[in-house]
Length: 289
Image (cartoon, rainbow, N blue to C red; front, side, top):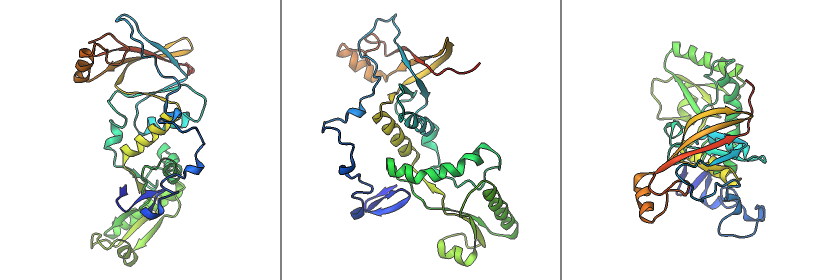
């Protein structure tokens, strides 16, 4: 969502010469931590020991919260949790964040006019939409507030616009309006010439989904969340007041082979040459039965 001559910031385009102090953070407003090559916040508070273990050993680590899946939802959850004094672990089975459904998402930030009134989508879509400008100011993932148009080309489709308009009203969506042909083509001259009207939602926008997920996860890790990639959850069980999460750790064969030649294990948690291993993570979040 960023170009050579500027960037999107908080939904709006900012020219390159105006980026200083807006898209680029003002260093005078930093928290003032001592200058270091690596920000100390980037060091996960609950990092697992790298000491090697025998093939029969499993490493048990206790967390307050374990979140499974490092897409946009998992990233948003752990970012919010990072505001609190919690030991939080984010597990991802792929080799990086945003490798599942998130990377294939259309990236549209819907306004909420087409969700069934009374549904959870209808309840959360509009409030979530309104969070994006501030999220982008904080994380700078390039949110573009471009609006959306639903076109009508005949009288039957005009009735659908009225229905969507009413849905939007029931869902609390603001600033919706039906635009007539003359104004419509002033807004978008390249539209289908058969269009006679459109429902305009100025608060709809779009993001690049994987950049959004990366920004969420990076910020969470900066705030102390521990991220573990290539960890496939194989089982979850309740043990007393804790949940026990069994995880299979995998690494690419090429990486394992190189480490083996160096006489080292893939990550220090299993014997040389195994290419993976089982770990147990425990979460202290109790649920009612």
